[in-house]
Image (cartoon, rainbow, N blue to C red; front, side, top):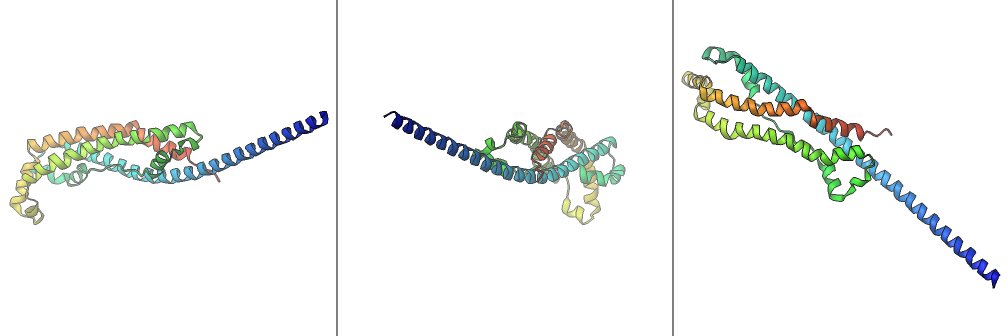
Length: 224
């Protein structure tokens, strides 16, 4: 009977060891698969944010150029029919509006699938979690600027200019337009535009969005 118990205990130990080995292999395989998934996600994020950086740099250039042109116009005030003709380029750029609309397909997919936990780097995970709030805060300032330009300034300008005849070079239309450009009402519009554009420039100077993009690019870089 003693030999039987020893044999049975030995068998149980072998079974337990076999189970532990199987569990260890399964754990190792799961970690390996998760690592491969993480690597694929990092590559997609890296590619997506390289594209976002290109777009953001273009947006930054537009806003910076607009502010520079707007300041050129304001420095030339009070506007007269004579000096307006020297500010054509400044007017062309000063009223440009642009919005940053990054690609968020990979991040949205991570949110939907719950695969954030596959990303081991806590710093990167924090940048990804806060990304939507960061860029939407910046977009809100852009939309406020754009809304005033399209919903308030443009309709008022249309009422005080004759664009069709202006395009034809009609002297009366040109004179009519110049009278509007040097008016107090137009100057007030430029003042509001500058204040709203300044909010965008302040966000750009704080570099919150830019730092998020650069850090996500850096932290998703994989050296094969």
